[in-house]
Amino acid sequence: MARSSRETVPRKSDNAYLRELGYKPVLARRMGPFGNFAISFSVISVLSGCMTLYGFGMNTGGPSVMLWGWVLVGAMVLFVGAGLAEVTSAYPTSGALYYQAEQLGGRKWGWYTGWLNLLGLLGAIAGIDYGCALFTGAFLNLQWGITPTPERIMVIFLCILALHLVLNLRGVRLVSVLNSVSVWWHVGGVLVIVGALIIVPSRHQPASFVFGEFVNNTGWSSPLYVGALGLLLAQYTFSGYDASAHLSEETTDAQVSAPRGIIHAIGWSWLAGFALLAGLTFAIQDYAGTVNTATGVPPAQIFLDALGLTGAKLLLLVVIVAQFFCGNAETAAASRMVFAFSRDGALPGSALWRDIDSRTGTPRKAVLLAVVCAALLALPSLYSPVAYAAITSINVIGITPAYAIPIFLRIRNRARFRPGPWNLGSWGVIVGVVAVVWVTAVTVLFCLPQSAPVSVGTFNYAPVALFVVLLLASVWWRKQGSSYQVPAYSSDRSASAYEREVI
Image (tube, rainbow, N blue to C red):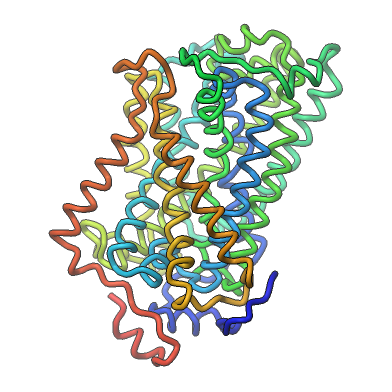
């Protein structure tokens, strides 16, 4: 951790500092540093993102883009994560990004950042759990010959969402335990999958294929454009690490634990994901057959061709459980965002969604709203073959700009920013500039069409969803913006004065 020459916020008691930031502690603080890291590591989930979009990567650039794209995107995301971690150390609240943006830029910055963050988090739940449903459908196909139709996948998806609702209603302690189990499940799962794909198959692809083969099945003629689109696999996977910030009001020593959770989750995921993608790609036996697999999930076909039916089913179960953990962690993060945004009066029906259950210390109604919204986002998958890619794009173009806004404001208004105990020192501005430039580029990129020719069935609906959310946010701001009130942070004011301001 670098030290800053500017005066920093000293390391303080969690609840005392939260009161300084303007909020009365109401959530149960039962998550330790490892649990905070675990939630972001679980949400990133290389066994979810890499696996569910592997087929997309096979068509959009192929092996070379998947492997080198993972290296590039992971490096850039470390810049974004470091910039976000520094701001999180100064403002460790459940509101996270929007609270940070409001403190550094004003009420409108906070308002729009919150809506973008909320869109991305809800899109993430939908994308993760729908991906889990796809892999479950592939397992059912191998085990009992059940055809994974869109209707059946939707039923599985809704069942997974319902389980995540029940688990998150039980309280943060259970969520923390499940996330801790999830870390070891992911690490062990990657080792088992990569080890099996190295040891068992008698034939592997050469390194020249894995790191040099370019494949374009998009309909676009420009290799540069296609290669850029292929970065979606990695960029989608490397999202959700703001979960550590959203759970900071339930984490001990949050000023340090939350930023460390962000950085460690990104770093370990970068290593694990590269090993996983390389292991899968070396083990491909029939590229065209894998792309067009009857299971609907290319990694399942890789397992089947390389390991046989029993091995394929066992590894699919490893992936499905990991994806289930991932979706559960994302549900927790999104519900805290709903709670925090409602606490400051930004959502319709805020008084309902900010309610805390006295027994579990959990925002139960916020959990319910997050799950219902995620279900609605996934409904177009019943009718459109590109809807799942749109959901993942919604996640990326919603949440990624929200990461960059507080970093941008920290650079622009650096005189206002007082670093926390975890900070980048003199490197903060340089790291922030790189992060903002990268986020701007990928946000534009993932609003572009992904398949040609463009039609109703292949249109990228992510920018439409982004436009609708920003429009609704603007309309709601005109109608209700006056009731949106984030408490102002000032270390000169007493805790009791802040408590009187809390809604």
